[in-house]
Amino acid sequence: MNLREHEQRDDMMVWLSQDEVSALFDATDGTQEHIALALGARCGLRSHEVLDVAPEHVVDTDAGTMLRVHHGKGDKYRETPVPRDLATTIRTVDDVRDESSSASLVDITSTRTLRRWVTHAAERVDDDDTGWQYLTFHDLRRTWATALASADVDPLLVCDWGGWNDLETFLDHYRGTFSPAAQKRARDGVAWL
Image (cartoon, rainbow, N blue to C red; front, top):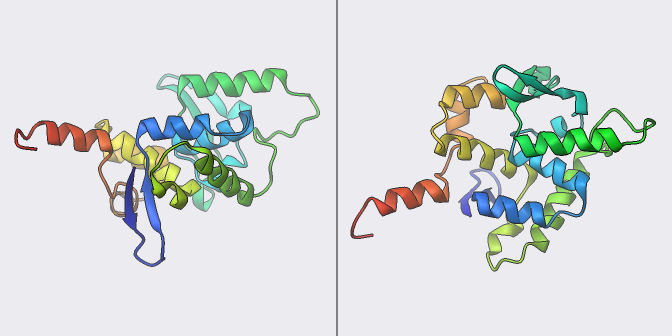
């Protein structure tokens, strides 16, 4: 887990390792919570975007399975990759849902509920790292962007998938730290570390 102080708030920004993301998912309480947190950590969705996701927004394209975000920040449309296992979970949930269910994938109407789910899952992670107390839903988006950058995905493509208007915003606020895996690769390349 990487932490950095917020410039204008008295708390921390958090970037999780992929193992920590898995531990967070394991600590969720049910399928809806797991899907909601995965939409942040695996698809880079903002909290308000999660509320609008419907199963039919997961589509197969020539670029692979994508999630269509119809009303992103500024009401802008974008498409972002969705991992195969998450797409399968979403489609399975859709197949077994009651036809009278809402069109939205997660049956909540408030981002406050998402914040509560993240806090409760972080509290349930069996880990001695006190950084979990700072974790917010937006940190899942930060983690997603940094994981893509660490995997050498072109930063302009990350901007496109994440709905950022410019590279500077992405670099200043999301890719503010290097993932633990990237740091380990760098350290392994220095004999005396």
